[in-house]
Structures are given as C-alpha cells and as structure tokens.
Length: 510
Image 1: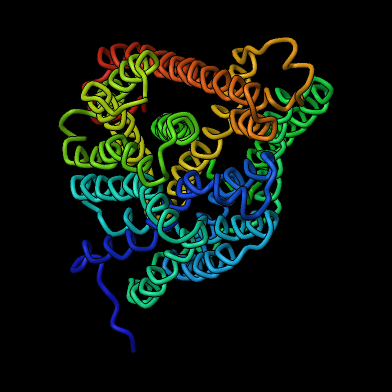
Image 2: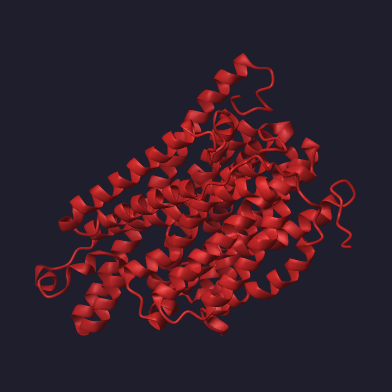
C-alpha cells in the first residue's frame, strides 16, 4: 500500500510536487516565441499557421480550464493531476516529432488538454493543503514565483536550446521532468470529492468554439479589406456563442461555471487583474523579441538574456505574498498598475538597440509591477473559495491567465500589424512591383526584400525596420494608457471602499 503525504505534516513537500507538475505548462505558453524563425523555415509554415501555433495552446487551455476544474472537484484533484501529467508528456513527444504545421498545431491542442488538467488542480490542492490564510498567502506567493518564473524561463530556455540543438528540443525537455513527477503525484493525498457535480463537455465545446471564432475574426479583419465582412461576421458569431454560453450557464442546474463564485467581486476583479498583466506581458515579450531578432539581429540566446531582467522581476514579485495581509490586496494592485503604467510609458520613448542602465531599470520595474498585480489577484480569487469549489476557483484564475497569454499575442500582434502597415513608407515605384503582403508584418517585408535584393531590397529592409520600431513604440504607449485607466478606476474604488469598510485592506470590494 502506498504511503501518501499528509496535508498537515507535509504541506511544503506537496507544494514542491505541484510546482514540478505545472512549471512545464507555463513554460510552454512562451517557449515557442523564440523558435518562430527556425520553426517557420523547417516546417515551411505560413504566417497564419505560425500565429495559430502560438495561439492555439492558450486558447484551448482557456476553454478547457473550467470544465477540468469541475472534473477535478468531481473525481479528485490528485487523480486528474496524474492524467494531466501523462497526457502532457505524450503531447510533448508528438510536438517534438512534428513534420508539418498541422501536426504541431494538433500537438499543441493535446498539450492544452493536459495543461488544462494540471493548472486548476494545483491551485485547488494548495487551497485544500494550506488552511491558514497567512500560510496560504506564502504558498500562493511561491506558486506565482514559479508560474511567472516559468514564463521567464520559457524564452531563456528556448533561446539556449534552439541555438545549441533545434526547435524540437524545446518540447523534448519537458519529458524527463514529467516522468519524474508521475510517481510523486501518486504520493499526494486523495482530494475531497464532490460526486454530485455533473461534467458536461458540450459547454466546454461551446466556449472553445466561441473563443476561436472571436480570435479568428480579430486576425482576419485588419488583413484584407475584401474579407472585412467575413471577419466581422466571424467575430459576431463568436460573441453570440459566448452570450449563449453565459445564458445556458445561468439557467442550467449543471452549469460548468460556478455562478456563485462569479457573483463575488473578489473573484471578478481577481480574474480581471490576472488577465491584464498576462495580456501585456505576453504581447510585450513577443514584440520585443521580434524587434531584437529582426531589427537588431540578436540571436535567440542573446534575446532571451536581454528579456531576462523583465521576467526575473516578474517572477520574484511573488515574494510579496507574505505582505498581502498587511498592505492589502487593492493597494498592491493600484501600486502595481502605477509602476507598470509609468514603465511602459517611458519604454515607448526609449530605444532597444542596446541594454542601457535606464532601460534595465525600466524592464525590472515593469516586470515587478505586473507581477504584484497578478499575485494580489490570485490571492483574491482563491481566498473567496472554499474546499468544495476550490477547483472551480482555480480554473477561473487559470482561464484568466491563459486568455491573457493567448489574447495578448493576438491583440498586440494585430495592433502592431495595423500600425506597421500605416507607417511603412515606400516609393510608388516600389509599391507597384511588390505584393501587398509587404504591409502585413516585418517578417513578410523582410522576405520580400530578400527575394528582390539589390538597392530596392535594402530600401525595403531599412524602411520596414523603421516602421516596426515606430509601431512597437505606439503599442507600448497603448499598454501604458490601458494600465493607467485601470489604475485610476481602482484608485476611485479604493477610496470609496475605504470610507465604507474598516476591512478595506483585506477585501476586494466584497
């Protein structure tokens, strides 16, 4: 008979096992960014296929996290975690052996299935293991350090592996870690089970379809005026399905979403402020890595080390977990929004050609600001849950995280493409001789420039790099505006709530 660990006697060992399981999941959300140039050439992928390789993982994760959280409540989080680790290991193997874009896209979907089993179960087990709120704050702080650290390690690990091996190694590296984790998961204590919960997969399918249609529509609209109506119609269908999902959940006795949890302001604001930092973080990483590699000609490894200060600060912000009770959730979110808004505003006016001391300071400040926002948001969500709905709460936090990663790439990628197309200035004689795809992205422009060659090719290269840097600055400024808006909104809420409640430091507008 297997002797399992105890919640009371071995809480920190349990936390260590959970970390070993979910770190590969968060790494896979960002690791692919560094592999795009070599992967595109090797698999002969189109620009659209590359975007789906990046997006599909987070989008399917977002759609599956809620039903997997409920499934964990129903069958036990330890059992679901075990299956998630096994599936993720198999998917990592198939992704590494992909021979065509569609193979990698399908493998990324399978990775999302395994990841969606792992993410909410880790948070639920933390909730059940640490009953003391102060200890839970420390445990969640450690969870955030490794979650953010995984996002930080992703590009760094990817850059080193790609330079020394190939893009396939970024998936193979998961397998030994997960094989070691499997026997450890078997030693976890059995979770509290609520067998009365019903798991209805059709709701998950409805949610995933809605998300994919909306994202597909967002990507289609700016690309081609002829497809404008098609993109708008696709987005409209997605929004309609999303509304249908909400209505069915509200009326159904076997809803996928815990409506009572969503009624809590602590959960709603917690989800919002998990989504915002991950949206900006993923978009910032993707666009900056593109500028460093395509404009300033850094290698993947050099790019990863350039980004390391930002992600290091983002990861280490979890150390603030022990101060959550003293400072207060709301105040930490406001300070985080203020710091990150100021950082992105200044970054929009500074060049990235060389990692100077002022730039290093701003990268550290931006990462720390976004990190403490996410930390406070995670604590707010999980503190609003009890043992019975901990899995559902964990899935809501995780869905916000993954939606932020997926939509960050989509939103900022589309925004950059739109600004880039407006700021790419070419002579009429050049425009008449090249494909209109030159305005889609810097990747397309550089490929066309290489094919043309000569003086014309050089001009296209120079102008596309100038346009990209200008567009990137505009996107950073938009990020600062978004963060500033929410900072003002939260500050108003904070002062209103401060007058009404003595416990304003401990609660998030309950």
